[in-house]
Image (cartoon, rainbow, N blue to C red; front, side, top):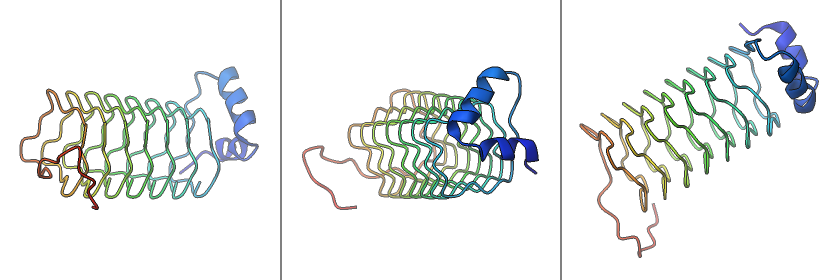
Length: 188
């Protein structure tokens, strides 16, 4: 359950929250299970925060700082995470279907068992990320960097991987889309 003081602080707005984070760098915000659906949290600093089980449906998290955040089981359906920083974040079993993760960084993030169906991940950087067991049907991963990623058992049925970098990725047991011709416009 979320810390009531942290929730109250968040309700003061992003600018106030970020100033508080600067003054209290050792505090690990506890927003676990909180309903933050639909909020505009653009450029918020939630690095290291506990957001496990949080409701973040349609939340605007553009360019948010979420490094090392715990988002295990969080519902980020249709959330806007464009350009967000999620390096080393725990997104185990998170719901990211229809989320926008374009240009986001998820280096070494743990997405084990996450639902990325229909997610938009144009040029996302997932260097060394753990995507084992991920369901990413119809996900748009054009130009994404998946170098060294673990895709073991991932379901990428009908995913768009045109221009994606999979060098050194573990694709054992993964369901991958057929090879695409980059000069063809596909309607998925």
